[in-house]
Length: 328
Image (cartoon, rainbow, N blue to C red; front, side, top):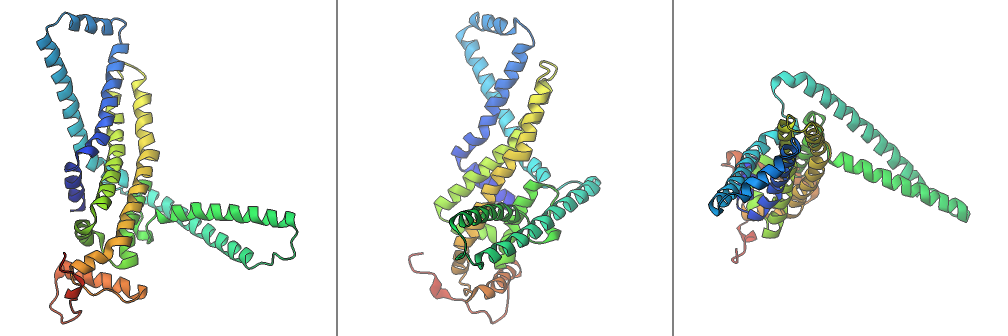
């Protein structure tokens, strides 16, 4: 459902297609270069052939090139969703042992980062409560430098911890998968709101600017995933140019290890921010009573999720119809 929502959103925003179509232009430019470099006279032969053709042939050649570009782009766009699923770590059963090893690796990293974070926090608190009055200028400068280093390391650890799921059982076997899984599951842990149920409703009440930002970020993520497909496809030109293999592999690996996770982090931050800022709109439009205190919110969110999933014939909670103004 959520994946279909994004496909529909992207399909209605033509500007985002430009982001995803750019790799297609680069791909076919590289393919032409590989083909032309396979023979010394190929480029001159093509140029001479085109010079000898009529205007109609030139137009037909241009239309054929545009058609090839469009068809390859559409095929790659269709492949983006399944490739993203693979990059997230949703692998077939015959890779279960590999996935289990990868999850154990991420669990070890998670535990190590948690231990390091607790150790640094204790050190930070001890320094914050330490006595600075008896220190001279040089000692204070040294302590300030150490404190800055601790803050910087804490920030790095916080970033890594934010982009991993809260529960160990939610870990996936890839970094990209864990980034997106963390964004999907954290609203449930924090607010009691299940993403599968709540996100389509939240999307409908988000301001246009927020939806535009989310759509653009998701388009950038999909474009980075499509680069993996384009890079793998570039291997087909190896018979024409030996360098097609290292170029294709390098591009795909760069997208897998760096580009796609980076775009996923931005998208994940925006998704979480949408819940943080606009979750009350879902309560408001459903006339559901707002929780009184932060401690009450997880149970209220779970009750709302259950109501949307199964309905309810209970007398409580009472709807709050006054939360929707006449202007709406």
